[in-house]
View 1 (tube, rainbow, N blue to C red):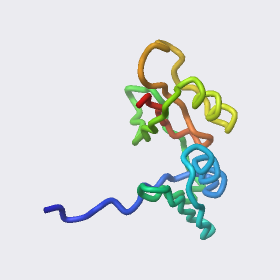
View 2: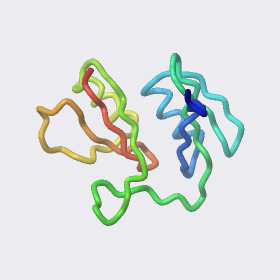
View 3: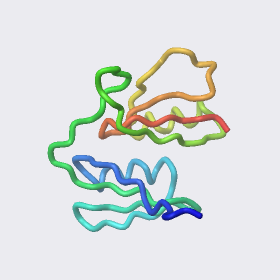
Length: 119
């Protein structure tokens, strides 16, 4: 038996509303804005939360001397179509190498790495 269940994944960022808006466009959901803390309630999933961190320094990826801290794997049906959409929303590619793989790596507008993964 587990001791706990995941309530939310929280990302530090300079602008919680903006980053919640980015992820709402990517995965859907309902934004609940509480100022320095914003929840994104994802349909059928856990909550993504965004916390104001005025001194936020984005992780560097890939950088063996700096941890990426964490990343999200987001499952998509069409990598090319999903890539086009996340780039239009402000994501930046972190890797442009092997396009035949089943995943692609990006940074969200606050610099957190995430992957689009083919299902």
